[in-house]
Image (cartoon, rainbow, N blue to C red; front, top):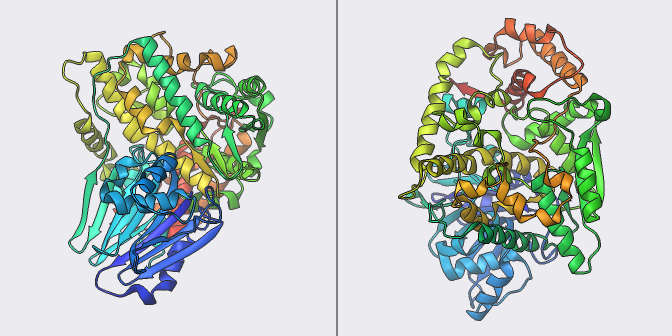
Length: 617
């Protein structure tokens, strides 16, 4: 896993711009702590920061391919992992390609030489890459099907700037730090519009898409989208197929030349991945797998059930770890760590925009990953199973199913993604966030594939599934990518394998919920691998602290912001409401959905200060 960046300018020779390209590349140092490389040739400059995972000595980048006369044909900067690279390498060798390394990077490069833009359809993995073709003088930007790995770009009059994160583009002197009304709406609402980036003029390559930049400008093309297909397998066959796919996926994703571990919450999703990995490791005569979980100090005494978390994770984590024999580590966090200014500054720098939604989950993930990184370089996660198999409550909430908006923004769920209560009403009216949300929702609806003859229930559930797999899951994948790569940890997500996604997306809802519970299909597919406590556990989200000391620290910080007349967020706030939030009574338990407006105000202020943002609203 790595960080990539680059600059193409068809009107100038970039040979003398190594300092600028170097500055862009160094912004990716956390994503790639092991090595740095820059390649410049005429109109193109590519930068790379490497996290070495496969072929530690041979996979350095940017990587070039030459013809028999030594002339460069193409140069590649690549972030990600290709899980079928061994099969592709064998196929390419049979077609006459010769390899100097054992890396998946070189397989990608030779795959481009062989198949050109059709390379994308041959890759199984998570990736973001850029190839400069010296023969055509065109740049290919390519992103994996589910958007696990990020890739941003900014078209210019003469070419393009690109990077794994906005900060790489922001490091270029020609990049203005302006945010329009639409960009601010993206910050303030839980919408995650495909292609949209917060900064004006910047875009994100859409999952499953490629962008080719030539002298005539960028051209975009989808190489993969979710399609509606008939499902002809019976229930038993469907369960067996899901199990077979998971076994193959996890087996492929356990390949690494560095220490690897599992992220374990004690829920069905991460437990399934952990159990499959443990069984595979034992079958190959390898040592027990390592697993990690997160919890909060004094949670034994302080935890109280809330609207979505009925029980703590810890007992289930321990049951699963004992059941599969993993070497388990619990990372226990205190509120003083979660509110440490240096930590929160690191989180902001990793995200490049206010990480307001999810609250303390951002810093807790950062701290968890930092602890994991001390012993592992790669971790497998259970992310995306809820979106795929129907794990959230809104998959079964009639009001959410009927609503004319995103299901997670309906009554019963919307409060978990709220954060606007302290903002000025005039600003909110001017932005018309409700109108912006409705526009983005209608765009999403227009994309939903249709299967002729499908029942009304299956049509509804296909719509809900599509929205979750193309909008909601992106917020989780972004969060996991930014927090893990901020500490140089690669996180793999087996449930985002496109083969599994395609198959389950087209499985009728009656099969996905055949026993009346959430994620029935997944539960049945891994039932023999899990202890009964985990198998029967009700869905619970990623844990959040309930320590009132955490909220007390947020309030104290907001009080300081209100007292400082130069705080850039003040024009955006309703100061009376903000002062009231500081002074309201605080009980023995602090719930995350009661802190959203505090988080939003504070992160906005930190972002506007740190990034010197110009708001065009």
